[in-house]
Length: 106
Image (cartoon, rainbow, N blue to C red; front, side, top):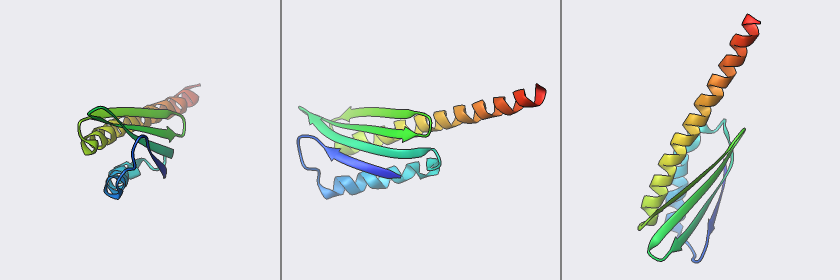
């Protein structure tokens, strides 16, 4: 999976980038669905914002998390991404199963 990391308003330290890449490895179990991804790091006043855009085969998943700590925002965003991608994968499986059943009955 290709991941583009962009920062707005500041230059992210290397440790944040490596932390983000390590956390993104949790999504490797969905590698057959994920086509491409991007992460945008920014801040507003005291809030650190992380926005993920992950392109799946049939869907685009967008997650935006904000908190006072960038590491917490990354963790919350990855957790949310995992849930949404797992749900999309489950829906895809259900949809495929319905096609098979309908074709066997028809």
